[in-house]
Length: 265
Image (cartoon, rainbow, N blue to C red; front, side, top):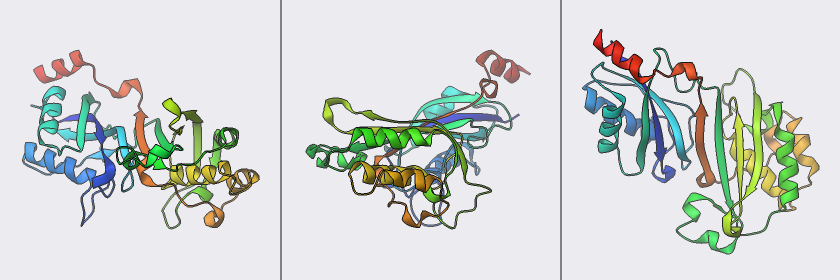
């Protein structure tokens, strides 16, 4: 009987057109499925906890797939890391219950957005991995905006037009700005049950404009109550955004002794 696995994947998003496989261009899904096909000898579909955009990075993106019964989590991790390109790395592989889906089974997802407010954010060792803003931001303005996000809201004003969504409601469980070490800027942390396309980047872009005194603080509450994205600030650059993690119910994971018992049958 085939086994379902959840891999935790890190990647540097600079060389990818995002997660989702495309007809032309390099994608994370394309690289993962290329390796899975090579080790299995047949096409294997990989599902991610979230569909990242071009240039977006991941600390721990959950990716689920199904392999033949001879594979163990340890062997799958070794094979993936041996064959994936150097800008991808699998930190762990766990067996999960049949029917598990990295996106559909997730209870919540968490992102981090990194902004460099100091002059050295323009360094070639930093700007590919953060928004090299290089100007100060008002911390009180950022905190006030983030506080307004908590709870369930309609985020149509902070989503891309033309996307197919049953609704635009998202339940925000965490939204806060934190200072980075050594006065290197700030990080925005946000966790929710779901996210819309470009939502985090549009939220950050608007909050940064307010905290730069380039638009009034009252705009944020007005946009949250609106369903029109025409007045929303431009999305923040993709290189500052990281997929941090997805949370799943404990019942989704197959404990090791159960996995060994299943193999013995």
